[in-house]
Every structure is written in structure tokens, then in C-alpha cells.
Image 1 (cartoon, helix red, strand yellow):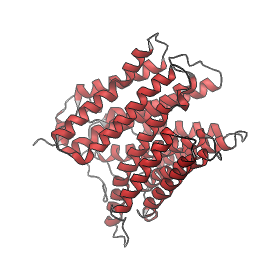
Image 2 (spheres, rainbow, N blue to C red; image 1 turned 180 degrees about the vertical axis):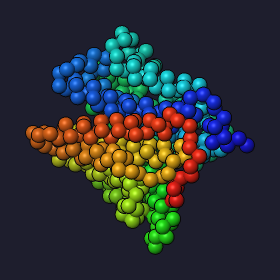
Image 3 (cartoon, helix red, strand yellow; image 1 turned 90 degrees about the vertical axis):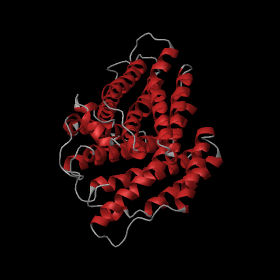
Image 4 (cartoon, one colour; image 1 turned 45 degrees about the horizontal axis):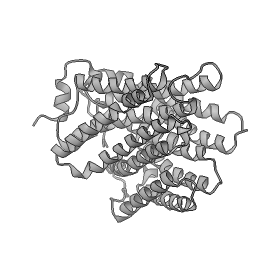
Length: 401
């Protein structure tokens, strides 16, 4: 059988089209930095955001359904061939998927005079194409274990469509569509992160003969995932209900408990490993923020940014930096530049909720936006060569996951 890597190597066109993570991680990072820059320019009064969405709606859509969707697509197009043993999408079909993503960004950002339904169709073209491709591959490979991943991506797409309908009336940034898209993304992180964080940590620690390794998946993990799904359901349907506060509190404690069993502090010497734990920590922190918001102790925006900037932003950055090194034949270790990206994003993920709690405190919003731009703009700069050049013939460092 032709392997995933041999199919990638058989492509003789631009290297950026030789694997799914390459164009989507690069485009997603550039968009994340550019979209935040546009938002800052709008807040300063330098530009108007006159596309099909109200400015606040556009900002929320650009980061969740714009940036995060690129990270999800890049991950899925890379992981699913490894899960199923089937051939990856490379070359011009991959370029076509990237073009669909770009069309969605243009349609939702620029004043093109399109009808709301045309904007919706262009924005959903990529999620629909991705879902069809993933469902086909998983069914053909009989990899039923990962079918929930397809279902969760479908929930995110459903939230994206609902967001468009709510945006026509204004206020979609506070609507159920955004909550559904965010909930689906957080559940993806809880599910997939629950596999890769302990796995990569185990590999790193085992290579260094650590006396303690992460706990293997068991019923506690299954119970935590069930609590996570329940709390997210309450968050989507009843964000201000007391039951949501209780469910989110339980889910937050459960996910913090999962994280504590994975021995992350033992891998503190390698940023590529500890950043995975830091990203997953924001899943639990986000639930605690949702509980506080439902109880009236914290603004909704602050609680959601613990997930948006922390869980979604940091976990996707962690995966993008790691995968981009491993799949291009480079050593799996983070230098000072990559570590600085992580620290900048952690600062942003903490500063934005703090700004919601203390809106009069100077500099917090600027710190959050600057940290975000530095993290993703820096990724695009540092990883431009790995993502656009052919794979190196260098084996990854010991402890590769």
C-alpha cells in the first residue's frame, strides 16, 4: 500500500501543497495576526469594517470560524490519513480546499455586495467539503473510533451556519451559533487533546527514563469527557442558568484533574511538551470562567476568551508548531523563538479575561492583542521555511510523538 508519506513525496509541485497542514497552518497563522490587526485598527478609528457582518460579529467570526477552522482543517487533513492508512489529499485538490477557505475569508470580510445567502454558501463551502472527505475516508478505512471527530467538526459547521443567520439580525457574537461553534471546538480539544497530550508526554518522559509516566486512559477520562459534553450542552442552550454554573464547575474540575494525571511538570524542560499542558489547562479554566459568568461574577466575554485565546489559540499553536517540525523532518525541540511565541500567547490569553474583569485597567487590551499578533505573526515568520520547503531528511529528536 502506498504510504501517507510516499504520496506526499510523490507530489512534484510546490512543497506547500505536499501535505494538508502546510497551507492551512501557514494561512491560518497569517490570518490570525492580520485579523487582530484589522480589529485594532477599527477600534482606533483608522478603518471601518464594512463587510457583511457588524464589526463585533466579524471579529468573533474571524477568529473562531476563520482562524480556528484553518487549524482544524490542517490537523484533520494530516491526522486522518495516519488514522486510516489511506492516501492524503495533496497537490491541486489541496489547493482547491485552501482556495475555498480564502473565499470564505473574503466573502465575510470585504464589502463585495453579495447576498447573505451567497456569503453563507462561500463561508460553508470548505466545512462541507471537509466533512464529505473525512466521512468518506473514515468509512473506507473503517476507522470508526474517530467518527466522533467528524461529528464534532459537523457541530462546528452547524454553529457557523447558525452564526450567519443570527448575524443578519445583528448580535451574532452573543448568539447560539458562536456558542455552538465554540463548544464543538472545545470538545474537540478535550477529546483529541486527551489523546495527544499524555501520549507525547509519555514518549518524552520514557525517552529520559522518568520514574513516573502519565496515567493511561481509563474510566476517569471517559467520565470527564461525559461531564465536558454535558456542561457544553448547558453552555450552548442556557448560558446564564444556574445549572450551567454547576455543570461547568464540575467539568472544569474534571478536566483539571485529567491534566494533573499527565505528569506535565516533569516535562517542563521541553517547551513543545509543556505548552500542550498549558493549552489544555485553559479548557478547565474556561469552564470555571463559564461557571463564574453564569453566576454573574464575570462578564461573558472574559469567560469565553479563556477558551478562545487560551484553549483554542494556545492548543492549536502548540499542535501547529509540533506537527510542522515533525512532519517536515526537523528535530522536535523548541528554541527560544518558539518559546517566546508560547509566552506571548499565554500573556494574551490571561490579559483579555483580566481586561473584562477590570475594564479600566490600562494596557490589558493592548497586551492581549499584541501578544496574539506576536504569537501568530511570529509563527508565520519562523515556520515559513519549514512549511514551504521540501521535507528534510533529518530524523526527529528522541522522544518524538
